[in-house]
Image (cartoon, rainbow, N blue to C red; front, side):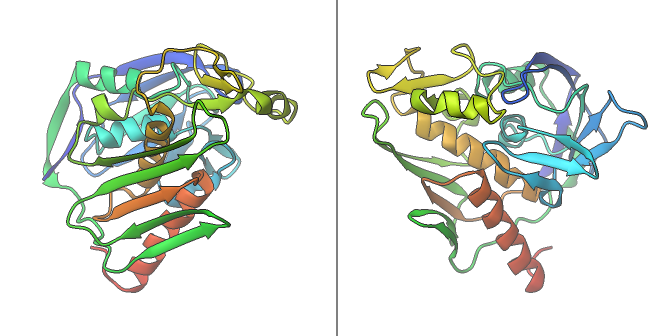
Length: 281
């Protein structure tokens, strides 16, 4: 399969979930083999931060990439959109430190990509890692694992005491329609946790316009886009985090009550194991 970049420039602006600061993003076509990478255009010398696993330097309620003292936070939704839509190479310029949350999903990004279209580039995609034996990461009862599979699939389960969420399960194949099945699922939060998170300096930009909020009486801002929108959003996060491997391994990824931290730990374990075995091509 050939690599692809976008056919034309994409621009979006909005507030960051955690920083509360408005930033402007410009996504540009770039050369074959360049990969997906960020450029901080608000800083001297326009520092570049590659969308690669080695650049991850924080995973508290979002995934953050860094290059020295320079960082980009909450990259997972945009990266999931690019990878899920088949964009291998993209230059992402941003004038701040956090990707805009927009409506809390990846829908605005996938709609924008679909609008401009893709351009084929005359070189093959990197050969995907093939998972040959189960690889798991656990944290108490939470886990994420990769098991051998003939296709690439993402399956997730969540379990919350709040009855409006409860226990949810969803499975999605990479051959499915990312833009329709996963991208529209919005981030969600629990009403009783919001005050604590704000006191610790997080979710300064969160609102009922860009996140679903659930309390003991139900959802504060219905309707949901899917009956199981929360667990679909967890798949969105997982796709974005695993996209940092450059290409998705051939495996069935299963997660239960996992987090960005566990996603990244699994990706690192995958990369370490297959690099050590010489299986990565």
